[in-house]
Image 1 (cartoon, rainbow, N blue to C red):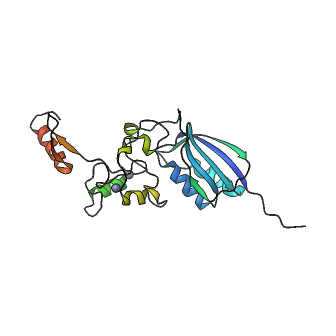
Image 2: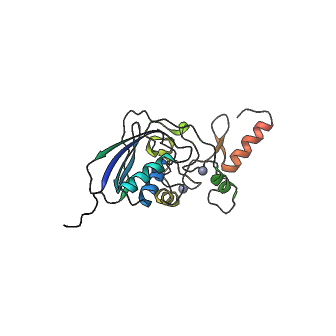
Amino acid sequence: MAWSVPAARRLRIRVHGAVQGVGFRPQVYRLATALGLSGSVRNARDGVQIEAQGTDDALEALLAGLRRLPPPVRVAGLECDCVPPAGDDGFVIAPSETGPGAALPLPDLAPCADCLAELRDPADRRHAYPFLSCTACGPRYSIIDALPYDRERTAMAAFTPCAACAAEYADPLSRRFQHQANACPACGPRLTFCNAAGTERAQDGRALAAAAAVLRAGGIV
Ligand SMILES: [Zn+2]
Ligand SMILES: [Zn+2]
C-alpha cells in the first residue's frame, strides 16, 4: 500500500461584523501565514472573505484565532463552506470586491498608545504630526467615501504615500501593514491656517498656534 499524504482541505469563510478598517486583513494574513495556510483574504461587499487551504488542525486554529481577535474587531458571524482545493502561491491579501455593501462602517477611533508615544517622541518621524494613525486607531467614518474600505475610496486617495510609509504598508510585521490611512508629515495631510478671505497664513505647528491664539482672543475658528 502506498503512502498517502492527508489531502489539504480548503475553506471559504465569510466573516461579518466590524471587520473592515480595523486591521482585520493584516491580522488574518499573519495568522494564516503562521499556520502555514495558503489562500487569500479580501474585503467583500458584506464583510471579509477568506479562502484558506491546509490541514484540518491549521484550519481549526485559524477559525479559533478569528474568534479571538481583540477590539476594535468585532466578529458577528462566520460562515464556512468547503470548496475544491486550489494551487495557491502562499497566502495573499487580494483586491477588494466592490459594489454596494453592507459591511459595518466603523467610527473614527481615538489615537492608540503607540501612536501617542510617537506623537510625543522628538526622534520619531511623526513627532507632533496631528494626522498620525495606524490599523488600531485613526479616522474611518469621517474619511470613507464608499465601502469596501480601501485608500482609493477615502479622502486619503489624494495623498500618495512616501517611500517610508509605503514600506510600512507592505511590511506584515508593522502595525501599519495594509493601513489604508497611513501618512506622515512628508506625504500626508497638513494643518493650514487661513484668514477669513481664505489666504494661507501659517502651516503645521504654527497653524495650530495661530488658531489657538484667535480662540484665546475670543475669535471664531
Ligand atoms: Zn495607532
Ligand atoms: Zn509618508
